[in-house]
Length: 351
Image 1 (cartoon, rainbow, N blue to C red):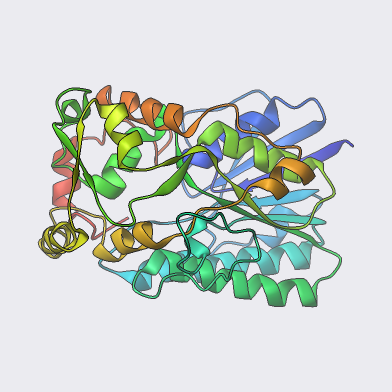
Image 2: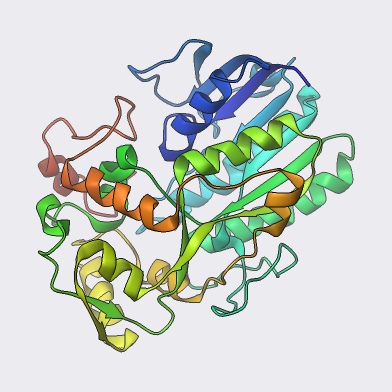
């Protein structure tokens, strides 16, 4: 099946740069439009850029005549100003969905997340039928869960639109490492500290069991969702399930059992003092998200990850040590004045 034109909203970030690369390389895709607030100094054959802000700009005109819209646009920061992320992530996403309907786009592929799921088991994988009520103490899962309800209503009102909800695990690649360090660890983490052998121990916290995925494998899932006549949610994750032992192997460290409460208390204090951008609620979410069953993606999408979770994490750590990035605004390896710019804008305070 040939696809004439695909629009990727949020095309300059971790997932977006891999998605547009996958689509642009597919001979069955005519053209790809990458949408971002800021046009990057990076491009590909078959890719064109369009500048647009999902909160304010006319998206309907941008979507007219396209075969599919992939919506990846998201702000993780500022964690200290949840109204800002809500305005972009929820209200902006609703504007994307409305524009898809108004423009008559046949397919909408939305980036949901494992974070949309309600707390669940770590020893028995859950299917896509697990409740998607998120975790109430953090903005990110609540925003993802809210949009699941919005899409429930959207599908009822627009039965002619093929809606796919991708629910990936935690996504890593080398060239997103600098951005992810800025978003979650902040400016005080030295890159060289994550070199194998330098981290003495990995804490084995209760609930520190999660899934990971290489960004290119996530992007292949999005490409398949465009090309195949599928609907509904799909879990995406790679083996093995990640626990303290897997992390310790990546870092050549020892595993030490530690209760979660002192780690959370230290993180909470550091977040309140603007020393780290990741909120304690996000920490709580990681400890509570369920392990996902990926059978549906493997059978209906014909999807299979080409990288193990171990490989994805090792590639991220390698990128972190070497300050890897891409010449797009989100993935730039270094801000203009380096980490001083991160400190001056307030850690966790501004996007």
